[in-house]
Every structure is written in structure tokens, then in C-alpha cells.
Image: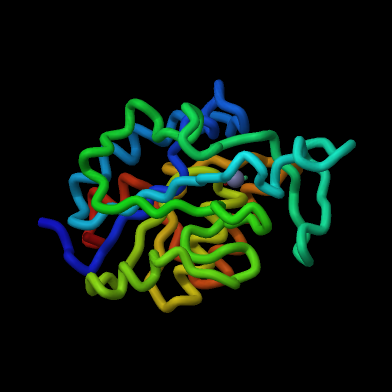
Amino acid sequence: MTNPQQALILVDLQIDFCPLGALPVPEGDQVVPVANALMPHFSTVVATQDWHPANHGSFAANHPWRKPGQVIDLHGLPQVLWPIHCVQESFGAEFVAELHTDAITQVFRKGTDPNIDSYSGFFDNGHRRATGLGDWLTARGITEVFIMGLATDYCVKFTALDARQLGFKTYLILDGCRGVNLQEGDTDRAVAAMRDHGVTVITADQLLSNSLL
Ligand code: VGL
Ligand code: ZN
């Protein structure tokens, strides 16, 4: 049985975030089997897709003399610069081939505005514009969200923090996530920050074996 008030949110399970991709997350591909195992246990499965235009301001290549990993001011917000990744319609922006995409109820794309990045699946990094995910979940009667995907220290973290802020009971599926770790310890600090903000950290096995569902 599935609980109609619960949704699974799969964050950015895209080719560019896997080990052979443009912005590789170490072991990023290893979370795909976790997603596939969990999807049948949810009546609502949302997937986010990082979906940048080629002129996106988060790409180091769009700023003369800048390199990935550097931080700039992008229209008033600090912005980590990244390699070119998840360009709209490109191969690297596609979902990982092994992901069972038939089980996805709805896809939300983010990062489409060249002037601002969007780590969260709910809002851009300045909380200026919503993607529609929050209203969509609420309209379906969803009150609890289970979040996993890539990367723990960026898009997963900000998706989970926004989910909490919007009032959803929020679970992080720890073994369904991997981090970038630009700085050693970033992933651990991200998990701690989520916990501090009321996110419940669980494992996929806990989810499947006990009474959460
Ligand atoms: C992400 C960096 C840039 C992510 C997306 O999915 O975590 N990280 N764009
Ligand atoms: Zn991105």
C-alpha cells in the first residue's frame, strides 16, 4: 500500500552528475538503484532536472578568466562557478538511462533563468521565483516528502530546506544521496544543516522495512 499524502522527490538524477558526466558527483550513479527500488512504494514521484540555457551564469566558461570552483557575485548572490553541465536538450541533461522514468509522475525543471542559479527544486537561489513544485504537491494533498538524489551538498540540501520551510514533513534518504565535496566535509555539514532544520534523516531500508509508509 502507498500513502497518498507522501511523495518521493528524486533530485537531478542526470547523466552529467554521474562519474562520466560534466559535473561528476563521486558514486553518483550508485543512487539510481535506490531510486528504482523506492519508486513503486509511492503513488507520487517527482523528479527534478537541472536544465540550464547555454549562456547560464553559473558556468565558469561564461565568465572570462574564471575557473570552476571559484565564487563570484552573480546579480547580487554568491555563485559557485561550475563546468558547463545539464544544458537544455543535451545528452548530459537527460535522466540516467537506468532510471525507471515510467514511474515518475511529474518532472520539474530548474535553473532555466541565465541570471540566477536554482539548487532547490522549489525556488531559485534568491527565492525570487517558484518552480511550481510546492503548489503542485499541495494541490495533490501531499504533506510528507522523501528526498534523495544529487548532489547532497547542493541541490538535495536546498530542496530539503525549502520543503521544510514550506511546511512539509521532510525525510532525507541518506544512502540515496551523494555529494560533490568541493571542500572536504561539505556533505556531512549539509546533512547536519538539514537535521538542524528539522529534516529527518533515514535510510532506504528503514523506509522499506518499518512503518513510515
Ligand atoms: C547541482 C551544482 C550545479 C546539483 C546543480 O544538482 O546539486 N550542483 N548545478
Ligand atoms: Zn546546475
